[in-house]
Length: 161
Image (cartoon, rainbow, N blue to C red):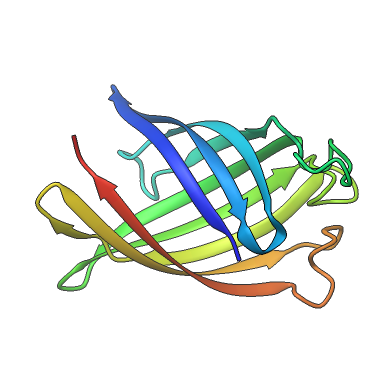
């Protein structure tokens, strides 16, 4: 139902890990795409690698039948992550998200909490990472009615330069 096309860069800066990128969210069944940019910072040297990432959806919608400001706005996620070695590396992560986007909440506020487990599988310059996760939407999200909990899967492919 959703395809996320992402271009991202990340760099270490002393004890910090910095990231920035662009995401195009494509909804083929709805013939709809929206775009955002983001920047994040985390501290991998601390337990649970605490971090924060801020996203800004800048184009609203391309469909004149929709409210053009429906998706435009900010989303901020606080995160924690830990690599666990169980014979293979497993990345456990948790996040808590806030937004002011009208499409995600009736009023600005906490929107969701998420947990995930990922297994990065490196093969030369390519890393394939299957991920399974759970997301809980909070009251106030128009999507929470009848679908508070969502289980999801993702397959990520990264190519190193």
